[in-house]
Length: 456
Image 1 (tube, rainbow, N blue to C red):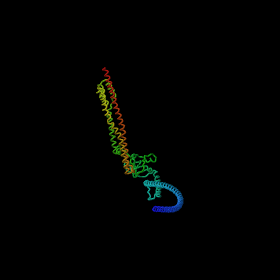
Image 2 (cartoon, one colour):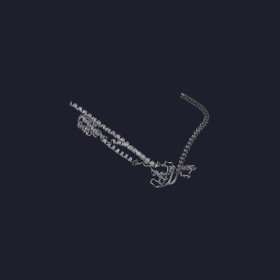
Image 3 (cartoon, rainbow, N blue to C red):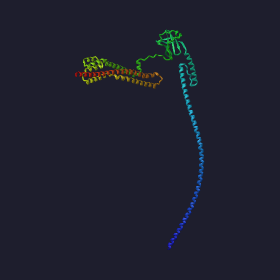
Image 4 (tube, helix red, strand yellow):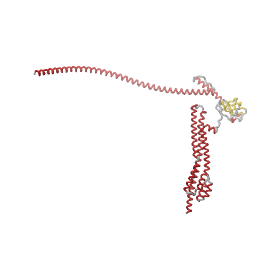
């Protein structure tokens, strides 16, 4: 009983202690919560203050940035306008620079042309260039001198003057006499035993024209203003040599090795044309009347008379008639085979050399084209090595190119015409053969019909 009471008292005391502890915990909890709340409130108030400060700073910064953005946009627009202006100025300056460069190049070309004129004036007018590196005043002075001296020389050259001088006759002898100079384009010489026009002999000398040396023109010819035979020349620095027409061999040699090949083809083609014409003439023969007579005799089966007439016929048709008379008594099929065989053999003779002529006519212009190509290649090789300053160096290749083309056409055109003519002639002979064979076959049919009727 005592134990239970003690146990209950102990439990009661424990319960009271636990309750007291719970109350203490609640009080501590309440006190801590009130502290946290107050701390939170203080922190919240601080954050609100900071937020306001930051919002004020943000507003200030946005306002400041907006102001800067407006200024930056205005500056950008200003810079863009400046860029456009600078670009336009640059383009204008580039155009001006190009114009200046063109003017400078033109002026350089003009100066070069003027210097060329001055150099030419050294030989024509006799002006000596001033030794001065500057192109301005010195060049202008030189041009003025050239103009004045050229004007004086032109006035002198526009007159007819007489002077004593020497010139050469056509035989090479030197003669002294009076030379009448008609400006700078013609001269007339008078010496003992000679009076006639003169032409350049080179190095400023004159010589007589061969065709007028024998003529004697009186001195009164000039006074009476009669017409004179004069030789018009450009200058006296180069000797005048009358051009001679090249011979056929020289023309072929100028065309090179290909030209000789074309000439060989032409000679061969002409020979074959002559040989073919000779053979066709022997194969043709005039047998029109003999064919009609033999046809009538064969129909009547008069073989001896027909054989006599056939023996007198010539050419391919004559051989066909002889074979027909000799084999007329055979059957129609056998006679037809024999006639076909004869026509085939004669056709071989008729067509011989015909294709070869047309081949030469086709090959000749191709060889001329080959010569043209090789000539132009050699011309371009010369141009590559030596340039185009000397036309004489280029004349060899150009001559080869043109001469081979000419020779190719000269060979091809007659060969083609004669070849086609002979082909037509051969076709006529072949037609006569076929027509004669057909008439013989018809005569065979008529003779057989007559023979059958007589037997009946």
